[in-house]
Image 1 (cartoon, rainbow, N blue to C red):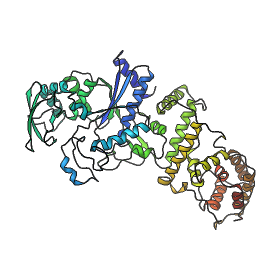
Image 2 (cartoon, rainbow, N blue to C red; image 1 turned 90 degrees about the vertical axis):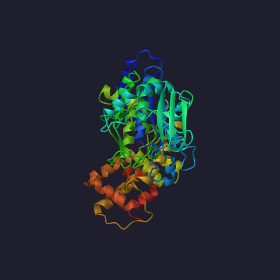
Image 3 (cartoon, helix red, strand yellow; image 1 turned 180 degrees about the vertical axis):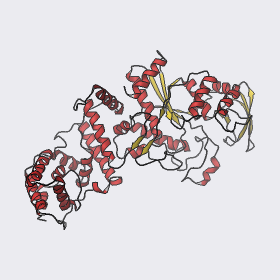
Image 4 (spheres, rainbow, N blue to C red; image 1 turned 180 degrees about the horizontal axis):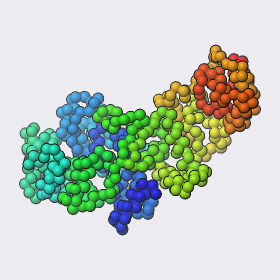
Length: 516
Protein backbone atom coordinates (compact mmCIF):
# COMPACT_ATOMS: atom_id res chain seq x y z
CA UNK A 1 0.00 0.00 0.00
CA UNK A 2 1.11 3.55 -0.69
CA UNK A 3 1.73 5.56 2.49
CA UNK A 4 -1.35 7.70 1.81
CA UNK A 5 -3.52 4.58 1.68
CA UNK A 6 -1.93 3.32 4.90
CA UNK A 7 -2.81 6.55 6.72
CA UNK A 8 -6.34 6.53 5.30
CA UNK A 9 -6.77 3.03 6.70
CA UNK A 10 -5.46 4.14 10.12
CA UNK A 11 -7.82 7.14 10.16
CA UNK A 12 -10.92 5.03 9.49
CA UNK A 13 -9.82 2.36 11.94
CA UNK A 14 -9.30 4.98 14.66
CA UNK A 15 -12.77 6.55 14.19
CA UNK A 16 -14.98 3.95 12.48
CA UNK A 17 -18.32 5.17 11.19
CA UNK A 18 -17.51 8.88 11.48
CA UNK A 19 -19.79 10.93 9.25
CA UNK A 20 -16.99 13.01 7.71
CA UNK A 21 -13.26 12.71 8.13
CA UNK A 22 -11.27 15.96 8.25
CA UNK A 23 -7.81 16.38 6.79
CA UNK A 24 -6.22 19.70 7.68
CA UNK A 25 -3.21 21.75 6.66
CA UNK A 26 -2.33 25.40 7.11
CA UNK A 27 0.17 28.21 7.21
CA UNK A 28 0.57 31.83 8.21
CA UNK A 29 0.72 33.63 4.82
CA UNK A 30 3.49 36.00 5.86
CA UNK A 31 5.86 35.28 2.97
CA UNK A 32 6.30 33.24 -0.18
CA UNK A 33 4.62 29.86 0.16
CA UNK A 34 7.42 27.80 -1.37
CA UNK A 35 7.85 24.29 -2.72
CA UNK A 36 8.84 23.07 0.75
CA UNK A 37 5.55 24.27 2.23
CA UNK A 38 3.82 22.60 -0.70
CA UNK A 39 4.89 19.21 0.60
CA UNK A 40 2.40 19.67 3.42
CA UNK A 41 -0.28 20.71 0.94
CA UNK A 42 0.28 17.60 -1.16
CA UNK A 43 0.68 15.18 1.76
CA UNK A 44 -2.80 16.12 2.97
CA UNK A 45 -4.13 16.04 -0.60
CA UNK A 46 -2.98 12.45 -1.09
CA UNK A 47 -4.46 11.26 2.21
CA UNK A 48 -7.72 13.03 1.34
CA UNK A 49 -7.81 11.24 -2.02
CA UNK A 50 -6.99 7.94 -0.33
CA UNK A 51 -9.95 8.42 2.04
CA UNK A 52 -12.30 9.05 -0.86
CA UNK A 53 -10.96 5.93 -2.56
CA UNK A 54 -12.05 3.98 0.52
CA UNK A 55 -15.59 5.19 -0.06
CA UNK A 56 -15.92 7.43 3.01
CA UNK A 57 -16.89 11.10 3.19
CA UNK A 58 -13.94 13.45 3.74
CA UNK A 59 -13.05 17.13 3.72
CA UNK A 60 -9.64 18.73 3.13
CA UNK A 61 -9.46 22.17 4.71
CA UNK A 62 -6.52 24.51 4.34
CA UNK A 63 -6.21 27.06 7.13
CA UNK A 64 -4.87 30.55 6.53
CA UNK A 65 -3.63 31.72 9.93
CA UNK A 66 -4.00 35.28 8.70
CA UNK A 67 -4.97 36.58 12.17
CA UNK A 68 -1.37 35.96 13.21
CA UNK A 69 0.73 39.06 13.83
CA UNK A 70 3.09 40.71 11.34
CA UNK A 71 6.37 39.83 13.05
CA UNK A 72 9.16 41.46 11.05
CA UNK A 73 9.90 43.24 7.79
CA UNK A 74 11.31 40.66 5.34
CA UNK A 75 14.17 41.34 2.96
CA UNK A 76 13.19 43.34 -0.07
CA UNK A 77 10.33 45.20 1.62
CA UNK A 78 10.56 48.86 2.62
CA UNK A 79 11.58 49.51 6.22
CA UNK A 80 8.47 51.69 6.35
CA UNK A 81 6.50 48.48 6.93
CA UNK A 82 8.00 48.32 10.40
CA UNK A 83 5.10 50.49 11.51
CA UNK A 84 2.76 47.52 11.00
CA UNK A 85 4.62 45.05 13.23
CA UNK A 86 2.16 43.67 15.76
CA UNK A 87 -0.89 43.98 13.50
CA UNK A 88 -2.67 40.94 12.01
CA UNK A 89 -1.20 40.09 8.60
CA UNK A 90 -4.79 40.33 7.29
CA UNK A 91 -4.80 44.04 8.25
CA UNK A 92 -1.24 44.80 7.13
CA UNK A 93 -1.20 46.57 3.74
CA UNK A 94 0.19 44.80 0.69
CA UNK A 95 3.66 46.35 -0.05
CA UNK A 96 3.13 45.69 -3.75
CA UNK A 97 -0.30 47.31 -3.84
CA UNK A 98 -1.99 44.52 -5.81
CA UNK A 99 -4.04 42.85 -3.06
CA UNK A 100 -6.21 43.91 -0.17
CA UNK A 101 -3.65 42.87 2.45
CA UNK A 102 -0.20 41.47 3.06
CA UNK A 103 -1.62 38.00 3.75
CA UNK A 104 -3.87 38.03 0.70
CA UNK A 105 -0.87 38.76 -1.53
CA UNK A 106 0.76 35.44 -0.64
CA UNK A 107 -2.39 33.41 -0.07
CA UNK A 108 -3.79 34.17 -3.51
CA UNK A 109 -0.66 32.86 -5.20
CA UNK A 110 -0.85 29.53 -3.41
CA UNK A 111 -4.54 29.18 -4.27
CA UNK A 112 -3.62 29.75 -7.93
CA UNK A 113 -0.83 27.14 -7.74
CA UNK A 114 -3.09 24.68 -5.90
CA UNK A 115 -5.71 24.97 -8.64
CA UNK A 116 -3.11 24.35 -11.35
CA UNK A 117 -1.99 21.22 -9.51
CA UNK A 118 -5.53 20.00 -8.86
CA UNK A 119 -5.54 20.36 -5.07
CA UNK A 120 -9.02 19.73 -3.63
CA UNK A 121 -8.88 22.05 -0.60
CA UNK A 122 -11.45 24.37 0.91
CA UNK A 123 -9.97 27.44 2.59
CA UNK A 124 -10.56 28.68 6.12
CA UNK A 125 -9.38 32.17 7.15
CA UNK A 126 -8.59 32.56 10.83
CA UNK A 127 -9.23 36.31 10.58
CA UNK A 128 -12.84 35.50 9.67
CA UNK A 129 -13.18 32.72 12.25
CA UNK A 130 -11.80 34.82 15.11
CA UNK A 131 -13.79 37.78 13.83
CA UNK A 132 -16.97 35.72 14.23
CA UNK A 133 -15.84 34.63 17.74
CA UNK A 134 -15.91 31.04 16.49
CA UNK A 135 -13.53 29.75 19.17
CA UNK A 136 -15.01 31.44 22.24
CA UNK A 137 -15.60 28.19 24.13
CA UNK A 138 -12.07 26.89 23.49
CA UNK A 139 -10.67 30.31 24.46
CA UNK A 140 -12.58 30.21 27.76
CA UNK A 141 -11.19 26.73 28.46
CA UNK A 142 -7.66 27.90 27.68
CA UNK A 143 -8.00 30.90 30.02
CA UNK A 144 -9.43 28.77 32.81
CA UNK A 145 -6.60 26.25 32.40
CA UNK A 146 -3.87 28.83 31.89
CA UNK A 147 -1.70 27.18 34.53
CA UNK A 148 -1.87 23.79 32.83
CA UNK A 149 -0.91 25.28 29.44
CA UNK A 150 1.94 27.32 30.95
CA UNK A 151 3.22 24.21 32.73
CA UNK A 152 3.23 22.20 29.49
CA UNK A 153 5.08 24.93 27.59
CA UNK A 154 7.54 25.54 30.45
CA UNK A 155 8.44 21.84 30.44
CA UNK A 156 10.21 22.45 27.13
CA UNK A 157 11.68 25.91 27.80
CA UNK A 158 15.01 26.89 29.32
CA UNK A 159 13.37 29.94 30.88
CA UNK A 160 9.74 29.60 32.09
CA UNK A 161 7.15 32.11 31.00
CA UNK A 162 6.45 34.92 33.51
CA UNK A 163 3.58 34.39 35.93
CA UNK A 164 1.39 36.93 34.11
CA UNK A 165 1.71 35.03 30.78
CA UNK A 166 -1.65 34.63 29.07
CA UNK A 167 -2.84 31.99 26.56
CA UNK A 168 -4.39 34.76 24.44
CA UNK A 169 -3.25 37.87 22.62
CA UNK A 170 -5.55 40.84 22.26
CA UNK A 171 -5.47 43.30 19.37
CA UNK A 172 -6.17 46.87 20.40
CA UNK A 173 -9.33 48.24 18.80
CA UNK A 174 -7.64 51.64 18.41
CA UNK A 175 -4.35 50.68 16.65
CA UNK A 176 -4.99 47.01 15.81
CA UNK A 177 -1.67 45.95 17.33
CA UNK A 178 -1.11 43.30 19.96
CA UNK A 179 1.11 45.56 22.08
CA UNK A 180 -1.35 45.01 24.92
CA UNK A 181 -1.40 43.90 28.52
CA UNK A 182 -4.27 41.48 29.06
CA UNK A 183 -6.31 40.61 32.15
CA UNK A 184 -8.87 37.79 32.36
CA UNK A 185 -11.92 38.90 34.30
CA UNK A 186 -13.57 35.49 34.40
CA UNK A 187 -16.33 33.90 32.36
CA UNK A 188 -16.04 35.39 28.81
CA UNK A 189 -14.56 38.78 29.73
CA UNK A 190 -11.13 40.23 28.90
CA UNK A 191 -9.65 43.60 29.70
CA UNK A 192 -6.65 45.18 27.97
CA UNK A 193 -4.50 48.28 27.89
CA UNK A 194 -2.30 49.09 24.90
CA UNK A 195 0.99 50.92 24.49
CA UNK A 196 -0.80 53.31 22.13
CA UNK A 197 -3.07 54.45 24.98
CA UNK A 198 -6.07 52.44 23.90
CA UNK A 199 -7.92 50.22 26.38
CA UNK A 200 -11.10 48.25 26.65
CA UNK A 201 -13.13 45.51 28.27
CA UNK A 202 -15.06 43.09 26.10
CA UNK A 203 -16.93 39.79 25.90
CA UNK A 204 -14.97 37.55 23.52
CA UNK A 205 -18.20 35.86 22.43
CA UNK A 206 -19.19 39.18 20.89
CA UNK A 207 -15.97 40.94 19.82
CA UNK A 208 -13.26 39.20 17.85
CA UNK A 209 -10.20 40.98 19.25
CA UNK A 210 -8.50 38.03 20.97
CA UNK A 211 -6.44 35.24 19.47
CA UNK A 212 -4.81 32.18 21.01
CA UNK A 213 -1.07 31.83 20.27
CA UNK A 214 0.07 29.26 17.72
CA UNK A 215 0.70 26.25 19.95
CA UNK A 216 -2.63 26.68 21.74
CA UNK A 217 -4.56 27.58 18.60
CA UNK A 218 -3.28 24.52 16.73
CA UNK A 219 -4.47 22.18 19.49
CA UNK A 220 -7.89 23.83 19.84
CA UNK A 221 -8.44 23.66 16.09
CA UNK A 222 -8.07 19.89 16.21
CA UNK A 223 -10.94 19.72 18.67
CA UNK A 224 -13.10 22.43 17.14
CA UNK A 225 -13.00 20.97 13.62
CA UNK A 226 -12.62 17.30 14.59
CA UNK A 227 -9.37 16.97 12.65
CA UNK A 228 -8.38 13.37 11.88
CA UNK A 229 -5.09 13.90 10.02
CA UNK A 230 -2.50 16.66 9.81
CA UNK A 231 1.11 16.00 8.91
CA UNK A 232 3.78 18.60 9.67
CA UNK A 233 7.47 19.26 9.05
CA UNK A 234 10.30 17.75 11.05
CA UNK A 235 10.98 21.13 12.71
CA UNK A 236 7.54 20.83 14.38
CA UNK A 237 8.41 17.30 15.46
CA UNK A 238 11.71 18.19 17.12
CA UNK A 239 11.81 17.38 20.85
CA UNK A 240 9.68 19.98 22.61
CA UNK A 241 8.42 21.34 19.31
CA UNK A 242 4.89 22.42 18.52
CA UNK A 243 3.75 18.83 17.87
CA UNK A 244 4.83 17.69 21.35
CA UNK A 245 3.20 20.65 23.08
CA UNK A 246 0.16 20.61 20.80
CA UNK A 247 -0.66 16.98 21.49
CA UNK A 248 -0.34 17.50 25.25
CA UNK A 249 -2.48 20.65 25.20
CA UNK A 250 -5.07 18.83 23.10
CA UNK A 251 -5.26 15.98 25.63
CA UNK A 252 -4.69 17.77 28.95
CA UNK A 253 -6.52 21.04 28.28
CA UNK A 254 -9.18 20.35 25.66
CA UNK A 255 -9.70 16.65 26.45
CA UNK A 256 -9.36 15.75 22.78
CA UNK A 257 -7.41 12.92 21.18
CA UNK A 258 -5.03 14.61 18.68
CA UNK A 259 -5.10 13.63 15.01
CA UNK A 260 -2.80 11.20 13.26
CA UNK A 261 0.11 13.47 12.45
CA UNK A 262 3.23 12.05 10.80
CA UNK A 263 6.36 14.05 10.15
CA UNK A 264 7.26 14.88 6.58
CA UNK A 265 10.82 15.51 5.46
CA UNK A 266 12.06 18.67 3.79
CA UNK A 267 12.30 19.28 0.07
CA UNK A 268 15.35 20.83 -1.59
CA UNK A 269 16.50 21.95 -5.00
CA UNK A 270 19.19 19.56 -6.20
CA UNK A 271 22.48 20.56 -4.59
CA UNK A 272 20.79 22.68 -1.91
CA UNK A 273 21.84 21.83 1.65
CA UNK A 274 19.96 24.21 3.94
CA UNK A 275 16.23 24.32 4.64
CA UNK A 276 14.25 26.69 2.44
CA UNK A 277 13.25 29.94 4.12
CA UNK A 278 11.15 32.75 2.67
CA UNK A 279 12.87 35.29 4.90
CA UNK A 280 16.29 34.14 3.69
CA UNK A 281 15.20 34.13 0.06
CA UNK A 282 16.65 30.66 -0.72
CA UNK A 283 13.40 29.26 -2.07
CA UNK A 284 11.86 27.92 -5.22
CA UNK A 285 8.12 27.82 -5.70
CA UNK A 286 5.49 25.62 -7.28
CA UNK A 287 5.33 28.18 -10.08
CA UNK A 288 9.05 27.54 -10.70
CA UNK A 289 8.33 23.81 -10.90
CA UNK A 290 5.47 24.40 -13.32
CA UNK A 291 7.87 26.16 -15.67
CA UNK A 292 9.52 22.82 -16.47
CA UNK A 293 7.27 20.05 -15.07
CA UNK A 294 3.75 19.08 -16.11
CA UNK A 295 1.26 19.53 -13.22
CA UNK A 296 0.82 15.76 -12.92
CA UNK A 297 4.58 15.34 -12.66
CA UNK A 298 4.71 18.00 -9.92
CA UNK A 299 2.18 15.87 -8.04
CA UNK A 300 4.22 12.75 -8.85
CA UNK A 301 7.31 14.31 -7.26
CA UNK A 302 5.46 14.67 -3.95
CA UNK A 303 4.25 11.05 -3.88
CA UNK A 304 7.70 10.04 -2.55
CA UNK A 305 7.79 8.45 0.90
CA UNK A 306 6.60 11.09 3.35
CA UNK A 307 9.57 10.63 5.71
CA UNK A 308 12.18 10.84 2.95
CA UNK A 309 13.72 14.11 1.78
CA UNK A 310 12.98 15.09 -1.82
CA UNK A 311 15.67 16.59 -4.02
CA UNK A 312 14.17 18.27 -7.09
CA UNK A 313 16.44 18.70 -10.11
CA UNK A 314 16.38 21.52 -12.60
CA UNK A 315 19.39 20.19 -14.52
CA UNK A 316 19.53 17.02 -16.64
CA UNK A 317 17.72 15.24 -13.82
CA UNK A 318 14.49 16.76 -15.16
CA UNK A 319 14.67 14.20 -17.98
CA UNK A 320 14.77 11.40 -15.40
CA UNK A 321 11.59 12.57 -13.70
CA UNK A 322 9.77 12.63 -17.05
CA UNK A 323 11.11 9.15 -17.78
CA UNK A 324 10.02 7.80 -14.38
CA UNK A 325 6.55 9.31 -14.71
CA UNK A 326 6.09 8.01 -18.24
CA UNK A 327 7.02 4.53 -17.02
CA UNK A 328 4.39 4.44 -14.24
CA UNK A 329 1.87 5.71 -16.80
CA UNK A 330 2.71 2.81 -19.12
CA UNK A 331 2.47 0.36 -16.22
CA UNK A 332 -0.91 1.81 -15.23
CA UNK A 333 -2.30 1.32 -18.73
CA UNK A 334 -0.73 -2.13 -19.11
CA UNK A 335 1.78 -1.01 -21.74
CA UNK A 336 4.82 -2.07 -19.72
CA UNK A 337 5.38 -5.03 -17.45
CA UNK A 338 7.17 -4.96 -14.08
CA UNK A 339 8.75 -7.83 -12.17
CA UNK A 340 6.34 -8.14 -9.24
CA UNK A 341 2.69 -7.52 -8.43
CA UNK A 342 3.83 -5.21 -5.63
CA UNK A 343 5.70 -2.98 -8.11
CA UNK A 344 2.61 -2.91 -10.32
CA UNK A 345 0.31 -1.93 -7.45
CA UNK A 346 2.74 0.76 -6.27
CA UNK A 347 3.05 2.23 -9.77
CA UNK A 348 -0.73 2.25 -10.16
CA UNK A 349 -1.21 3.95 -6.77
CA UNK A 350 1.41 6.61 -7.51
CA UNK A 351 -0.03 7.28 -10.94
CA UNK A 352 -3.56 7.55 -9.55
CA UNK A 353 -2.48 10.09 -6.92
CA UNK A 354 -0.62 12.08 -9.58
CA UNK A 355 -3.70 12.63 -11.71
CA UNK A 356 -5.72 15.84 -11.63
CA UNK A 357 -8.71 14.39 -13.45
CA UNK A 358 -9.58 10.91 -14.68
CA UNK A 359 -6.56 9.04 -16.08
CA UNK A 360 -6.34 9.24 -19.88
CA UNK A 361 -3.82 7.32 -21.96
CA UNK A 362 -1.79 9.74 -24.06
CA UNK A 363 1.32 9.85 -26.23
CA UNK A 364 4.66 10.24 -24.45
CA UNK A 365 7.09 12.34 -26.49
CA UNK A 366 10.51 12.06 -24.78
CA UNK A 367 11.26 15.29 -22.93
CA UNK A 368 14.88 15.35 -24.10
CA UNK A 369 13.84 15.12 -27.73
CA UNK A 370 11.23 17.83 -27.16
CA UNK A 371 14.05 20.01 -25.83
CA UNK A 372 16.05 19.45 -29.02
CA UNK A 373 13.13 19.97 -31.39
CA UNK A 374 12.02 23.26 -29.82
CA UNK A 375 15.43 24.66 -30.70
CA UNK A 376 15.11 23.64 -34.34
CA UNK A 377 11.44 24.15 -35.15
CA UNK A 378 10.00 27.56 -35.80
CA UNK A 379 6.75 26.93 -33.93
CA UNK A 380 4.72 24.22 -32.21
CA UNK A 381 3.09 23.05 -35.45
CA UNK A 382 6.46 22.55 -37.12
CA UNK A 383 7.82 20.81 -34.01
CA UNK A 384 4.90 18.37 -33.97
CA UNK A 385 5.37 17.74 -37.70
CA UNK A 386 9.04 16.88 -37.18
CA UNK A 387 8.17 14.50 -34.33
CA UNK A 388 5.60 12.78 -36.52
CA UNK A 389 8.21 12.43 -39.25
CA UNK A 390 10.76 10.91 -36.87
CA UNK A 391 8.21 8.45 -35.49
CA UNK A 392 8.00 10.03 -32.03
CA UNK A 393 4.32 10.85 -32.60
CA UNK A 394 1.54 9.19 -34.59
CA UNK A 395 0.11 10.96 -37.62
CA UNK A 396 -3.26 11.40 -35.89
CA UNK A 397 -3.42 12.99 -32.42
CA UNK A 398 -6.37 12.97 -30.05
CA UNK A 399 -7.24 16.27 -28.32
CA UNK A 400 -5.60 14.88 -25.15
CA UNK A 401 -2.49 13.94 -27.15
CA UNK A 402 -2.34 17.38 -28.72
CA UNK A 403 -2.63 19.13 -25.35
CA UNK A 404 0.13 17.05 -23.79
CA UNK A 405 2.52 17.43 -26.73
CA UNK A 406 2.05 21.19 -26.88
CA UNK A 407 2.53 21.55 -23.12
CA UNK A 408 5.59 19.31 -23.05
CA UNK A 409 7.16 21.23 -25.92
CA UNK A 410 6.53 24.55 -24.16
CA UNK A 411 8.00 23.24 -20.90
CA UNK A 412 11.00 21.79 -22.72
CA UNK A 413 11.62 25.15 -24.36
CA UNK A 414 11.41 26.88 -20.97
CA UNK A 415 13.84 24.35 -19.50
CA UNK A 416 16.34 24.87 -22.30
CA UNK A 417 16.20 28.65 -21.92
CA UNK A 418 16.49 28.71 -18.11
CA UNK A 419 18.22 25.60 -16.81
CA UNK A 420 19.64 23.24 -19.43
CA UNK A 421 23.43 22.75 -19.54
CA UNK A 422 25.31 23.94 -22.61
CA UNK A 423 25.71 20.41 -23.94
CA UNK A 424 21.95 20.32 -24.55
CA UNK A 425 21.86 23.59 -26.47
CA UNK A 426 21.39 22.95 -30.19
CA UNK A 427 22.53 25.47 -32.77
CA UNK A 428 22.81 23.95 -36.25
CA UNK A 429 25.58 25.76 -38.09
CA UNK A 430 24.61 27.30 -41.40
CA UNK A 431 28.11 26.89 -42.79
CA UNK A 432 30.42 23.88 -42.65
CA UNK A 433 32.80 24.42 -39.68
CA UNK A 434 36.55 23.88 -39.89
CA UNK A 435 36.99 20.49 -38.22
CA UNK A 436 39.63 17.78 -38.34
CA UNK A 437 38.25 14.30 -39.03
CA UNK A 438 39.98 10.98 -39.64
CA UNK A 439 39.50 9.23 -42.95
CA UNK A 440 37.41 6.60 -41.18
CA UNK A 441 35.13 9.26 -39.72
CA UNK A 442 34.70 10.87 -43.15
CA UNK A 443 33.81 7.51 -44.70
CA UNK A 444 31.36 6.76 -41.90
CA UNK A 445 29.60 10.10 -42.32
CA UNK A 446 29.26 9.55 -46.06
CA UNK A 447 27.70 6.12 -45.42
CA UNK A 448 25.28 7.62 -42.88
CA UNK A 449 24.34 10.32 -45.41
CA UNK A 450 23.08 7.61 -47.76
CA UNK A 451 21.13 6.00 -44.92
CA UNK A 452 19.47 9.32 -44.00
CA UNK A 453 18.14 9.72 -47.53
CA UNK A 454 16.40 6.33 -47.32
CA UNK A 455 15.41 6.32 -43.63
CA UNK A 456 11.78 5.70 -42.70
CA UNK A 457 12.08 6.10 -38.93
CA UNK A 458 14.51 7.17 -36.22
CA UNK A 459 14.74 3.62 -34.85
CA UNK A 460 15.52 2.27 -38.30
CA UNK A 461 18.20 4.89 -38.86
CA UNK A 462 19.73 4.17 -35.46
CA UNK A 463 20.10 0.51 -36.46
CA UNK A 464 21.77 1.46 -39.74
CA UNK A 465 24.20 3.83 -37.95
CA UNK A 466 25.12 0.97 -35.62
CA UNK A 467 25.73 -1.26 -38.65
CA UNK A 468 28.03 1.37 -40.16
CA UNK A 469 30.20 1.49 -37.03
CA UNK A 470 30.40 -2.31 -36.94
CA UNK A 471 31.31 -2.50 -40.64
CA UNK A 472 34.12 0.03 -40.21
CA UNK A 473 35.29 -1.41 -36.87
CA UNK A 474 34.87 1.84 -34.99
CA UNK A 475 33.34 2.82 -31.66
CA UNK A 476 29.92 4.53 -31.95
CA UNK A 477 31.29 7.52 -30.02
CA UNK A 478 33.80 8.17 -32.83
CA UNK A 479 31.00 8.46 -35.39
CA UNK A 480 28.69 10.44 -33.11
CA UNK A 481 31.37 13.03 -32.38
CA UNK A 482 32.04 13.47 -36.10
CA UNK A 483 28.35 14.01 -36.81
CA UNK A 484 27.97 16.58 -34.03
CA UNK A 485 31.13 18.40 -35.06
CA UNK A 486 30.04 18.97 -38.67
CA UNK A 487 26.49 19.99 -37.69
CA UNK A 488 26.92 21.75 -34.33
CA UNK A 489 30.63 22.49 -34.06
CA UNK A 490 30.91 20.50 -30.79
CA UNK A 491 31.41 16.87 -29.82
CA UNK A 492 28.09 16.27 -28.02
CA UNK A 493 24.45 16.73 -28.88
CA UNK A 494 20.99 15.11 -28.84
CA UNK A 495 20.45 11.47 -29.87
CA UNK A 496 21.92 11.34 -33.35
CA UNK A 497 19.36 9.38 -35.38
CA UNK A 498 16.22 11.35 -34.48
CA UNK A 499 18.24 14.56 -34.59
CA UNK A 500 19.34 13.88 -38.16
CA UNK A 501 15.78 13.11 -39.23
CA UNK A 502 14.50 16.29 -37.59
CA UNK A 503 16.49 18.32 -40.12
CA UNK A 504 16.04 18.74 -43.84
CA UNK A 505 17.29 15.49 -45.41
CA UNK A 506 19.00 17.19 -48.34
CA UNK A 507 20.83 19.57 -46.01
CA UNK A 508 21.91 16.71 -43.71
CA UNK A 509 23.13 14.49 -46.54
CA UNK A 510 25.15 17.34 -48.03
CA UNK A 511 26.72 18.28 -44.70
CA UNK A 512 27.61 14.67 -43.80
CA UNK A 513 29.35 14.35 -47.18
CA UNK A 514 31.32 17.46 -46.18
CA UNK A 515 30.03 19.33 -49.21
CA UNK A 516 29.23 22.57 -47.39
